[in-house]
Image 1 (cartoon, helix red, strand yellow):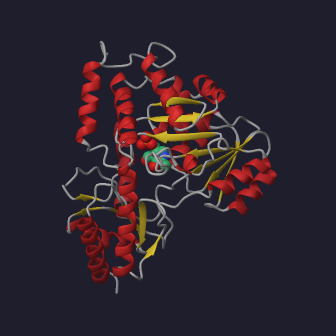
Image 2: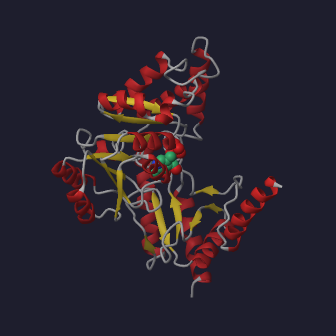
Image 3: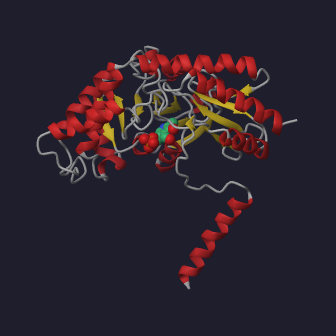
Length: 384
Ligand SMILES: Cc1ncc(COP(=O)(O)O)c(C=O)c1O
């Protein structure tokens, strides 16, 4: 009986989503050209990286299959600590601490840094993992309008205790960039510590993919950065980089670090190999941005009236207002053989529905050209 009531309650909520046309379902890849994944540089599909990881695993003496515990219990290794030192060096930080995912890193960071009496100010478009971390914090929390320095300053003027400001360097849904130099200036002026989630900038910005903070020379002015490995690096996991005291603090207080089994050695080797590949092939980053430019040129010619959320990163949002129209255009482009997804309201505000297009280093000009043509014909058949 109790089970029936729980099932009825879940079914009710699912039906509400279904009726609104917003039901989420797992789908398997259908062999379309990938304009959807976060594999910006193509490392997840790189044969060379797979071989390097296989070889590293074979060569590593007595590699256990699991880490056997959290880092504070049995799960720490010389390999993990050496990798952290390498990552700190690469991202030009004093110290680094690995987390099992970007989600864990953001939750651990935002839940543990700001204390009761402190203030946490978050951009209204930060990722769900930062929102969840913020919800677990006892600090006073406020959202400021997206990339709006004046609104942030208004909150900074009233903030109490130690003040933290959390932003993304590249926003995952809109693909726009945070105004990082101005944010650093503002945080300096008010003595606030800036936290930057570099999930979509890692491997994408910086001459070697160090992230947008390093690309702009701001690494000494940002308190904490989160780099994730599941996107451009093509593997899995994440690291928080920043001052040594931040690492010591997170080891003590970040619950998603303390109370979770550490990444297995296989993952650590995969991360090390992915970074080696990134350093060895900076041309992948150049190709990614060339493809972005080529796409924008094609779009300027064939989609002259299109509205975009932003064009500064490989994430491009083609605005197609209205859930029904946006979904219809996406379905037509998908049927033409391209994998991309509509982002509907309420995930984004009504009227700002968009088709999210992720460009990659491995796209050919022919694929990009065909995509733009497919969008052009789908738009003209769906929208008047
Ligand atoms: C901006 C941002 N931060 C953090 C995460 C979480 O990273 P991970 O997938 O490694 O958990 C994501 C992934 O969707 C993201 O887009």
